[in-house]
Image 1: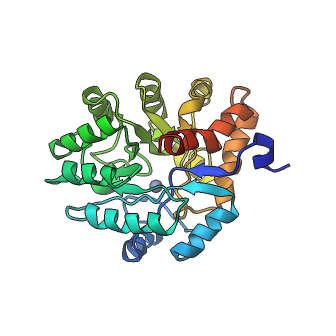
Image 2: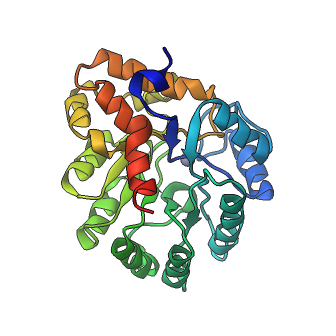
Length: 291
Ligand SMILES: [Zn+2]
């Protein structure tokens, strides 16, 4: 029996996949290929096709809903990405309408405008972007997002390579100021798993995504998920969302799913009800039921 029949779900809901303008995707691939300073190790990408083929590939895995996360690393880039992402969502109805923002004048205005135009999910990457989530130029944008309740996938953990901008401290400060923000902590907050898990426990709209977590590749990099946190992770079953980082992953997509299932087999609290929520229902309720 396949996982969909066993769990009674229509497919996977993956909140953390990347689709980018072709010129930007080419640059991202070059960074992974060169194992650049923010990557830290060999990262042989498994999937390098054009978008239409990648979307078909996701469908072939049983992914029914997915995101198209882009993120800016310099000023005057976010809106170019947002415009492209809007077109992508128009072409692919099962894709979430995604956006991004950067600490720059006008950020709050274009975030508000994009939410009004239907953006359902934002992405912010403090390591690649090289900014603090507490940057004053972001404060109004966070306020708009907190009020709207629009989720934001936030890469703020110190993996794969820490910088002056990564780590849980600034995110705690941000949540102190905007406690209702719907942050989705990418990679389960790796490697600061305990600190980001604690935020998901304390703040009503904070969630975690599984991106790359529990895979052999990630665990070898020193990102092993601490066994003592698993009972708390089991209790947070309604706040954990499937994410994968497809297509920028150095292993087949199935390995992400298998790794989560293997983890669940080993720990009694992570039962089929937990898997059902993580692999489908949580994403479905957050985005489809909300729309
Ligand atoms: Zn990612």
